Length: 331
Length: 146
Image (cartoon, rainbow over all chains, first blue to last red; front, top):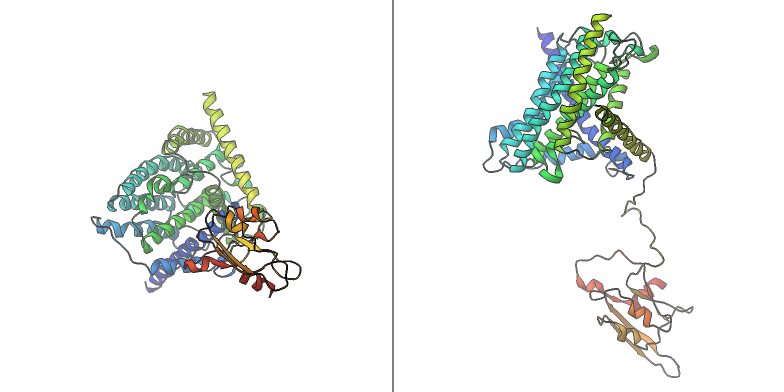
């Protein structure tokens, strides 16, 4: 009993530390990456390569006063930032990093992660609703339509993968892809499905991850040009900090899921140096792509965003689902 | 239906073209200057406030004709000179530029027939006191010669 309790505490501490460290240093990576793309040096004053910037920013944010606007719904206003951070930390509990590095593998891991991820958009809605600010309110409305639009193709694509694997266990999904690089779900031929649309499926899933984590070019929730800062207009101090960290933690979760579902998790191509580093390599390559995309494309319009989902992603993912189902039946 | 797929395809291709552009930019060297630590040298034609030109002996070229003073539309320039015994030319004793009123029109430089005025390359001009912008150009010349 006491051993399991210790295990739980250890897992939670590691999960929080991993999420927080990633959130902090992804901000640094994002700023450096953006600067490189725009041919600036980026943060380079505090510490070597500006590596002390994230902790110093954290200290600055924590030292500030938390201001609650008059007329705001206090409970929701304080609860919303917490709600932004906790689904990411909870999801880390069940994400397997390798055969042995997993806090607690459950056989419906996908279901648990999506259950928590869907509460993530609640934080935007609560924050927008409770701020008593018209911009925040508009942002909350957008967040609702966006999360409805993009959870559908995301879940349909996930169902495709679950059908191929025949399991919701993340470990099991990775094991089925581990025979060789051509068995990864992103590649169509040797996988169990033989579905030639699997690369498209991967793209759909990746685009939905971008939209679900409210990243540019889909960051309509915080569109500065029209909504000031959207749902976190009224947040200062660590309230804002938690939203910020939550965003990056969600990116890590989204990239972990993409890695596990499509890129074979920690299975290594050509049997080279098997280990957890393959998972981390794929994970951080995906995160780098997130940053790269953000600094390449301008923000879409809300119409463009919804059209992309309802007219392109949902039909395509449905076709892919049907095709996969048929091919599984045939082979 | 064909246009639907064509649109998707061309849209996807354009996304990858955009990403290629930023990918190439990522590896190029930075072009910005880290200002307080690095500074650029000003271009040849940069027009800062005026400065006196010195002759080879280290004395100002100015002969105190007063044309610059008259040419100045904002009356920024105050100058004075004396004619020492036995000398042909006047010697400059005072040249005050009130930079708070100067609009950098350059009429003084244009009016000077003795190659005595030029634009400086000074651009770090910021202060909280207006007295800091009353420049004594003669003093600046001496300071430069030290």
